[in-house]
Length: 468
Image (cartoon, rainbow, N blue to C red; front, side):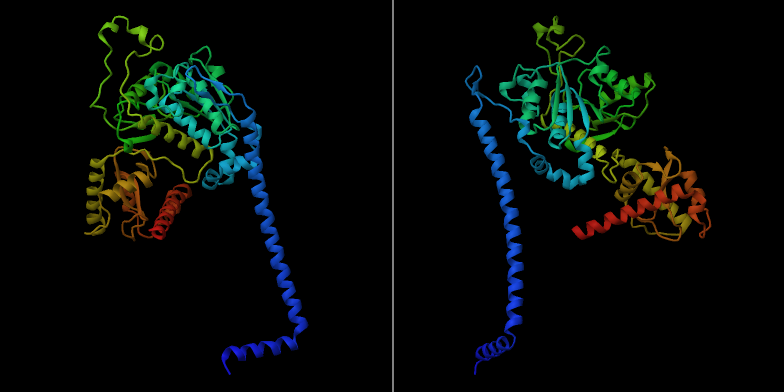
């Protein structure tokens, strides 16, 4: 007798002895399976119906809209009515942002209000990415019009928009992307007479993407005095290296001629820090102002957009202003959402300083701890110095006489046992007895800050170990 035949006979005898129980069990299993399938099918059908309903509404709106033509014979697009967008469709459009920021962070972004002053290459891209992130309200301020030469860097302008106000052009295109966002277009030039109105409404952030230096200073001064969060774009013209773009406090900028001028003017107004800027550390030594044609030199003011505005401009690589704008938008989104551990690093690119700190660290190790070998190299020093401690002493903050030393004297140097102090502080720290209670000696605030930073670093290290 084969195995299959034996199994069949055994199964048949079992069913004959327990027919009622088996039938009940099979019935229960079948009912559960049928219920699960029904629920899943219902949910799937509901999603399909919602999607089909939205598509039908959009098609209906498209069929009944009038067809208007431009002077050159192309069609003028009409905006999709905002009421066709349900909360579910909006959530679907913003789903990736919500997954990244979390529901709480995404909600804060959805409830925020940002003002963008300047709708050119930087401002248009910053506004566009804020819009795509679902910000509730955007006010865009600019007096200028779209030109042919601006199409190489503008976020949304097309040939049909040439000659139209930049802010109107932006609003038109923005309504086609996210009609649920409130976009306010202001064709105006910011000045002391209208600044209260244009920057009113208690914005969460103000973006300065203005070309004119005096207007830029006035805007930053106003925001500083009114305690409005502002990020100002420095010079994107004549720059080409995307890896040099930074966001930092104005006091920490270097190599940027516009930032240097802004620092000097703000200093005269008593403002030394407290204003964030987007800038590039690249030296623009390879390009100069575009020349003005000889016959226009005498009447150069006629070729400026407005009196006191420059008649000549720097050449622009179209990709760089967009990166400035997107960097600004990313910074604002993360700040509004209160994204965890978001603490922008002001990159100093101070290779010489890192080399000196590394040399002093090795000397300290040899003299104080009799350690002849260290696993940290110059790159590690740069990371620990800038990324972990932001170039500041854990005890006294910024200083020009900083060094690295062990936190726990009984352990070797490493990412989880190296702190930044001034030389005097480090000498005192190294002289402490090995059994010193550092929490009591330095206080809970300093101690917890150091331990938290080490813990964050350990988590990052373990996370990347799993990824790689």
